[in-house]
Image (tube, rainbow, N blue to C red):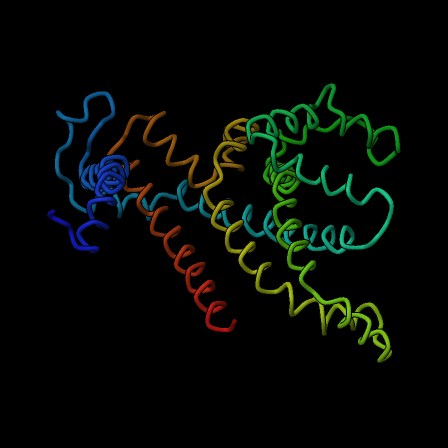
Length: 295
């Protein structure tokens, strides 16, 4: 009876999956790269795909609106990810303590993470409502503001308000990862540090922090990559406004390629975003490899 070698069998088993990946990912990627060097228009891409070389890329790097969207994205990533890490670690430290109701709080922690992003965005848009929003009502009743504010209508604070909505949804991921790491710390180490006279901060610095730094770093990189690609929450809450103050790179690509139907230049914008994302992914893989070598 004829038998395939192990290597041949492995390739035969991988062929269906590789075919799907090439068809679903490979072909669209190649097509996107091609369009990025053309002046293709979405209404008639086959008849408008005149070769323009690197003109789209030079135009993108000189486009102030695109550069502003990168700046907005950088601000969004720094604010939201920093807050998620800090709040997530603090919540994990709290839920790692023994108290009544801890199990219920741990279960409730998953709810924001399980909520669809679009639903979360709609909920926070209602909360921020300038006329009947819960935030205005609360702050007015406790005397922090005298009149209702348009939280998403002010270019100076709109992006920060969107970041708050993103933090509320995603900090549980950091908390769960940190909580899992805290569960691996031996109680004997904590007791030994306590007997040696270490206070709470010293125990955290010498025992807890070294145990959670690796998983928290992974959560930091993962959330940075996801936050850099943010689109849906911006689309639902602000549509990039007011005055483009909340327009991120992903939203700019969407507008260029689908709203303005300039698929050629939109493809170049998208590939620039892909390259930036690839750098973040490379940093993530390097971090994973480094952690593997230190285990």
